[in-house]
Image (tube, rainbow, N blue to C red; front, side, top):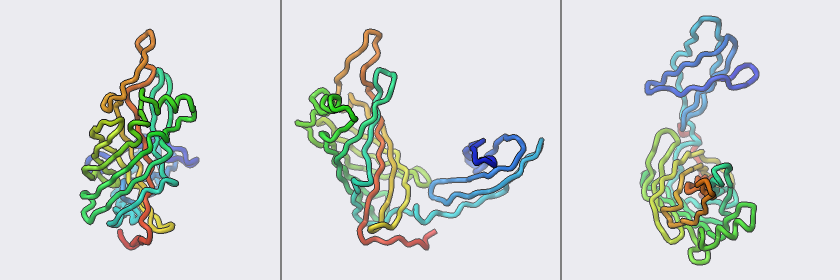
Length: 250
């Protein structure tokens, strides 16, 4: 809910029946209703002192750009994608980094749940803007990039979590060890530009110990220099050359 100055004054999630409520001071408001896989709906309302304003029944229209991608082999475009990570340092701050070189494909099946994804990441391409730290991360203390040059992810299952939210289960091989991971993915839709492009944002958390990346120094008070949990953030744009979007859907 936004006021006349377009400042957000309230936010609410609907309950299981699609109902929501918010308490605001009297005035004119713009209400934006959003749900994954649907076009946003905007409504205006005037609120008076001591009065309740009912918006009634609101219906959202499906967003054609958020229909699942067409079947085929989609190739990840590294120029418009990113593999980033966040680690804790001294329990005081976050260190941000990325892998600069990676490649992958997503095979979309007729039944979307049967789709498959595979990604290879160059371990030596790790970059945190500090060369000395990057050298340490490539060393046997961490990635041991010379011995284990690639990080390898393969999916095992696609599960719809609702709207444009998907869970992608898979296996990640890192530092010579393989462990299960689950990506919390948000499908961002499709656009036509040099073929058809689809966008996905995904996050997950990794625990270094699961991959025997156990290097650690502790401060005198027991605080670790590097946290054991690493947050992974993926921004993926994949292409299907020569593809077309059926804009009449939805």
